[in-house]
Image (cartoon, rainbow, N blue to C red; front, side, top):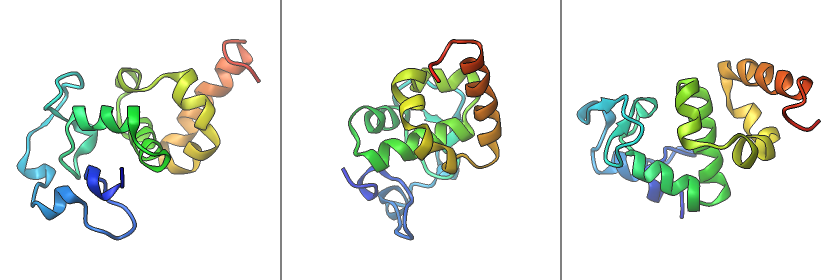
Length: 124
């Protein structure tokens, strides 16, 4: 599925959510990361509900999956990250592509991954 069809802002195009006038400001942002119709707090700029985020992570194309993994890693609370992602299935295998997308949170995740590797919890 294309990024535009999932409400993702990308490459200067207006997302379908934006085209519909469905800005996050008009939809309540919630801390609830489990309810399918809730718009999670890390989607403050576009009203994409949990169900759509989970669908994109499960069956989206590589670009869509990487977009959501990076958004979650960079914007979600640590404890909520693991409600969406798996360390060994999602983060570690995609790390080289995810790292440049994480902005200010990159150092945080590098610190954790390096520590888990040093402690033998992740392979080198």
